[in-house]
Image 1 (spheres, rainbow, N blue to C red):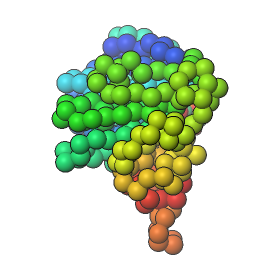
Image 2: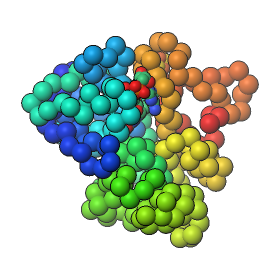
Image 3: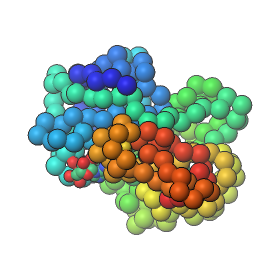
Length: 247
Ligand SMILES: Cc1cc2nc3c(=O)[nH]c(=O)nc-3n(C[C@H](O)[C@H](O)[C@H](O)COP(=O)(O)OP(=O)(O)OC[C@H]3O[C@@H](n4cnc5c(N)ncnc54)[C@H](O)[C@@H]3O)c2cc1C
Ligand code: FES
């Protein structure tokens, strides 16, 4: 883990309140799918954790939603400015070369980290199916980018304005998708449903964080099987095997 000043290459709006920020830094060489970075934003004491969406030779991409004052300020950074970033952080998604098919399940701003997972499996010429859930069509992003990788994409929306009307689990059932190894990132109810329906794969938790590097115990979650055993989401997570922690 180290601190770098990354150069803003672009910072563009791609959906309602959602921005794609491309940063140039040799930190890219140390990043893996599922890692996150902790971003120092002008005027804010605590850094903001954001997942890595895509990794290039000397640049990486994050996709974030404007929620409060930190992400609002982040959306104002312009090409040519520098942003102080701490990374790589957290436990990453393992890629299993022996698998022939994987299912990616994402919800809202949980979708971005799945993009690099899809890239890695497609580079290995594996079958990748993605079921991506959003509130509404105006919130939708990355659909075409996943398709361009050769991923079979299903969209579900809460209001039915695009794709399947309902949640991702019902969308999977409706389309008879029977892949049993999953990568799931999204809001807690989605992760819980994923954990209830699948036995193999990974989830990534999004917990409120302070230090983001294992020092403050501000982000703990409980082991599902052993009473009194805890994990720091920022250090032992955010990626966990399905069934390992209580959601
Ligand atoms: C491991 C991890 C990966 C994440 N990846 C992404 C991503 O790829 N894209 C994305 O849009 N968002 C992601 N988030 C959520 C993102 O960190 C928050 O939306 C962001 O910190 C909100 O900051 P704010 O100042 O705009 O909001 P405010 O609500 O003003 O923030 C106040 C404080 O609460 C914290 N906070 C608020 N919401 C969250 C949250 N959901 N998780 C953690 N801390 C929070 C902030 O860090 C800050 O310290 C991730 C969170 C974690 C923990
Ligand atoms: S945020 Fe401090 S230990 Fe995880």
